[in-house]
Length: 528
Image (spheres, helix red, strand yellow):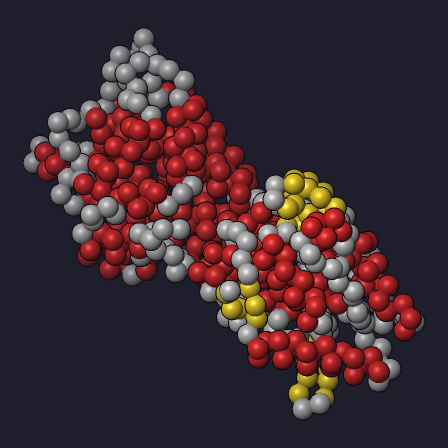
């Protein structure tokens, strides 16, 4: 059993719960706060006050008073009417995060829902009972209404879910798990669909993958630098301390540790005519460090948002006095801006990797055989693999356009400025896929380049990586299709195996440097 303290979710908990079924429970103080919040709603209703979402319509219909006998039906209708999402369904890890974030938000005791509502969300996580949530349909304000309606409709036995690999009607799946549909009371449907949990879950999933890509980019960029006989002088700590950018300092430390002791580097220290390397090699710490800073900013925003209360109205109760306040915490602008920043970082990780591939295949710059093939002309080598990398980098440029600068009024202009956070976060997956494939192409190209310097060796960490690359993709002696090799390398980069491989029997300085590339509490050296 994992105990959840609402408002104090950790990176480790977010990572673990997104991966599979997990029995969860709230701490007793949290349950007490949930009960007090529900009692506060009952007190306000009994007083006869007119309160948005309890005894009124929604959005532009907020001035319509709802009779007491229809309060429960109002909440059911809300879930049904708002479940209008379209498109490909969200992935299982994202849906698990949505369930967790919604339960934790309601569990802080400012939403006025019953214990049964929160327990229902926890039961879904325990049974890995995952609602089918279409990915499109939210503008990221008034909450992620459509996605959260699809997420929570199964609580009342409606909608679709996946259970053990099968898609089932919710009522059937609940019965199979020994669960009962939840009866909604006043405000509970509104509390369920109001909030930023969809956009935040999508952004968190993007963050975890982007963090992985950034570290992979540093490792692969180091391999490329050695393959191109580049200099490690640009990573001298004195250079980076003068600038003072923390991500840059950490990235430079990683490059230094990865390149220290390379035979290839030593071989050309005294006879290399080049005065300076091209920017794609020389400025790696500056570019990747800036991306690291951007991801760290996004991580800080998203962890706060994961622990936030973002529905409306909010319930405040103290010493028997209850008050419901209408506000705008459902507006996902923080998530939208964080996701846009992450998109820029992901695009840049891919953009500089594409430039390194271009450098490797250009014999005039790299000093390697043209297009990394021993018989250029008869063979094209990595010529078109680079074209694929260029295509993906260009696509990322379009996807990196900030979503947060767009806004379309909805609900008859009542909701007149929105964040587009859900799209801002959802589009990260496509960009991550593109950048992962660019890095995979670079990895294969760098491995090919390293072999041009045999019998000289690179560093132990980079040679460990090279050996594994060759288990995925044999050296390119003559032309063959590289599509399957690229896909295998991209798949490998999605796991922490690359980082763990580099850290096998690594000195403490290298392990520390690689771990500092994390923007969450994850440690690459540990099993995930």
